[in-house]
Length: 101
Length: 190
Image (cartoon, rainbow over all chains, first blue to last red):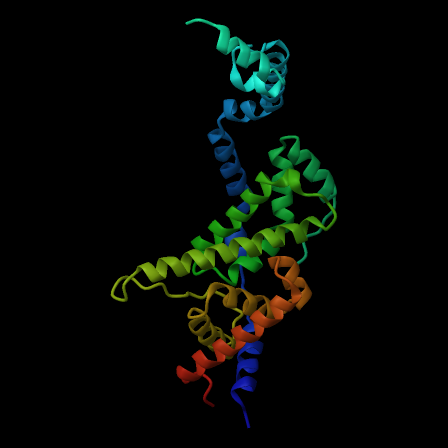
């Protein structure tokens, strides 16, 4: 007695015997592929590929500029935030109270 | 069919292809095209689609050749690309089919011409194609690899990137779904 499971197995077994025949489609495939690769290569934008190579240079430049700004920037003594962070709040208050505007 | 691999090794050809040699990559394609066509033929609906899939597989391989680490044979790496490409095609086909109304040109699964087919095999394949066309892409992929290509669970896990447990569960569900579809279609009645 053939159960649906057995019948399904028989279908798979019969379908397995029919290996796909692809010789005709494979003919001269390398030639078509090489032509396609050349076309793909022609579509590449050279400057785009080159710009990726410049990424480390851009990163270094940004880091150097950051370091340079950090080293050369001076804190404004009239700036409240920097006065507080530097522990100069009393001097700041005295200056504020004694300055005439 | 095994393509004789006389001459330079795959690794040597890969190095040359990476250095820009189209001839070296064409030689790789010549050696391994039969395997790629064999996988794609299980999923393609007609000869043009088969050629498109095979070309897409080799173009993807060419684009990512620098990522090939060589810890598995090139053929295995290429098969993985082929299986994933076929999965993408199945999903796209499914989306296209869902976007068509029933009155519009429905997609039918043609069989590739094969003079060696016997009547029973041809019928079996047609019944299976009809039934499997109603499955989800992952169900269809897994049944094709497991039942038609006779891959092991481990091989399927390697090809698809799914875990072995996941492959087993998906295979069980896919087989169950196909059995139900074929029963409704009365394709499993003796």
